[in-house]
Amino acid sequence: MTDETSATEETIGTNTGPLLVKLLYENCPELSKELLTAKLQSIDPMVEPFEGDLCLFRNERYKVKDVAGDVSIPILVSPLEALNYEEQMLSLQQTWDWPEAKTQLTYCRHGVLIADVGGAALSAKDRITAFQTVLAAVLQLNPPQVVFWTTSQRLVEPTTLSRELNKGGRSSVLNGAVNVRSYRDQANLSHHILDTLGLEYFGLTDFQCHFHSLEIGAVAGILFNLAAYVFEHGNVIETGHTVEGINGEQWKCSLEWSLVAPRRPVIDIHPGDLATARKL
Image 1: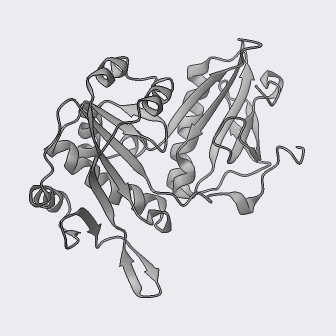
Image 2: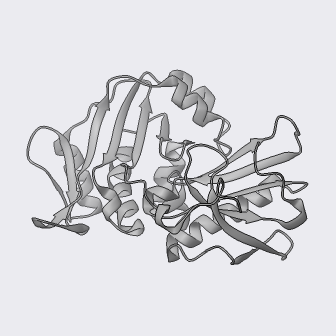
Image 3: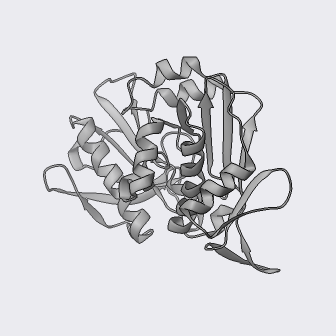
């Protein structure tokens, strides 16, 4: 590795920004704090609203230590004043499992934002559980046309997501919060870069793989499974480790800077002779 591409352990998990989901609607939804509180408490009785008019909630199950003692993480549900269509279209290019997403986007004129405040202080599992409890409640009360995870650049079909959140399991945890993106080298269309996006918001390291002559879906499956593994076990995959490739071969891992924005440390998965040059 060169100094230009090498990352360090100190740079891992440094994104302390909020988790952000935008629910997009054809018609303006009516948010009721009273109804939302009741729905949330039917899902998890430990959820409580903050005082005031804002739809701001906390889960007493998940707290972090502060100078004032143990404090809960606020999660906001708020109407969006305007939609960013450019942002949505960029994410559409990295949404692979919902062919109807573009059509649904054309209907959307209104939105609701769900965001946590200071959630990076929680463990990955606690953060996603607290956040998805609020998300599940809003999906049930005010079903949107589109669920837009801005932190992973992914559009998700609302009915499928709501069903998965209700039954729980690994797929529900990662459905939206983490994306596997795909890029092609325009100078050589047989060369590809795949990466995950979204893990850094949980203090975890994203993955990338640059390659040729491999089936894209198979590589994407490996990256998704690695994302699920570190979400469960933490940052246990490091430089010098190997992971199993498509045909059982061992692919080497190294900590490097991402080849595709946003710039962040990633675990680069090197598929031997099928790896490509390090820049698009």
